[in-house]
Length: 166
Ligand code: RP5
Image (cartoon, rainbow, N blue to C red):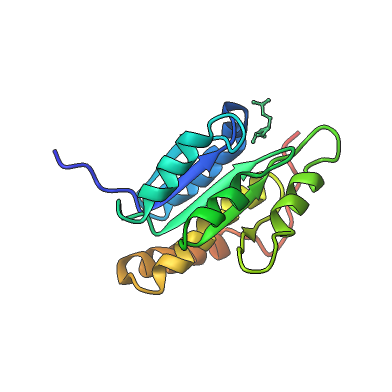
């Protein structure tokens, strides 16, 4: 059986980021976007980082998503190596709740952008939706998937609040 080639590459700095970044993968799967997930650290595995990012475009990857915490250099280092769009997801941290990682990703020098999302699970989910929006510009099937996903999300919001089950 022929496997479907990934068009989104999800990267994370550590196994400890997977609890959050699995929401990126789950959301991309719901949206019908083929993806792959790799542990790649800017600090601990720099050669793996260069090899992965430099081959991404020729392998058919269209968008790269990088989740990282603490110094959170990963998305910036990725963006320095490729013209592909790079989205950054800051991990929640013990010291500053992820604000440190968010600022590290958002405060990139002019010329090398990282599209920085919210800290934690919301950012992980939104990175998948934003990557899908980018791809949907030139892919009709994925554009339809995105419209359906958004319509379902809207339909699932009750107008009247209900008591939470205790
Ligand atoms: C970052 O350091 C990773 O992205 C992770 O969020 C953080 C801590 O990594 P571990 O010490 O849990 O492996 O590079």
